[in-house]
Length: 295
Ligand code: AMP
Image (cartoon, rainbow, N blue to C red; front, side, top):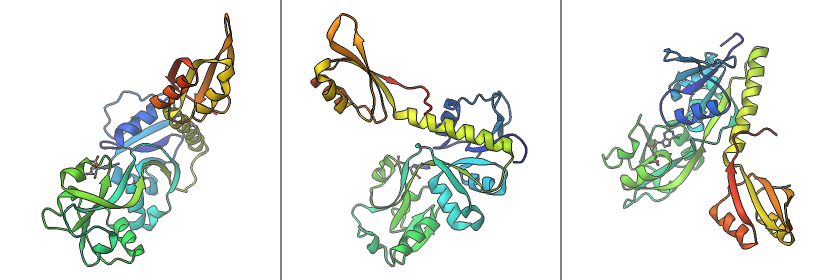
């Protein structure tokens, strides 16, 4: 929208909604209380959230009803493949949640086991454009049956030989006797914008949000580790610490042979990491979440 407040389109209900609201909240946005079902006003930033269906977000951003939007890549790319107006939308950043895969799957006991087996057969999907493009690229001529939901029941109902659907945990495929045999797309939530010029105020709010989102994403898997280590095993300890370049090493009162090590670890810290640290002599190991980060 034009003006000085940035309008961000986010999913109202569904798989992306919770993660989107969590991201906005962790970026320090405080939403004012309101009865409005469509718009939520931030009280501490010139920002309004527009709560809409995820399928509508690319359209709302392309038309200028929203300045920016948070949407799944699956929804974005399908809309882009269908409409040249939406094809021009820019992905500002990946947001690292709502990860899923668009996969081709078929009945476990059936004849379709690979993409080439689809020639002359039918594929049910809610993503006809992405599916068609993928099959064209592979030189396979199959009929696409578009369904708006419950795609996984199509083979059982005799509607299609295979499906192309989103898979997260794989439980839905399993429950319907289906097995995936190819990945068409890897998807996660992304921040999008139209390449239209916006007011200086909106651009500056967008820059601030992008920096804060980066901080939230970085802090999600980053951990702060504190431990005590024998001075002569310091190099072994450093070698085990995941993704930490320059730990702080401090003296421990009354112990000449031991040092305290503090490190920010940018890679996931597993139980096995702690076990390895202990094996090289580390003791009193604490792993703590990081609330906020700014480079
Ligand atoms: P799952 O059983 O966890 O593999 O989830 C599969 C079901 O959830 C299918 O019906 C998908 O259409 C849907 N699904 C999975 N991930 C997403 C997503 N990121 N966005 C929308 N729907 C999804």
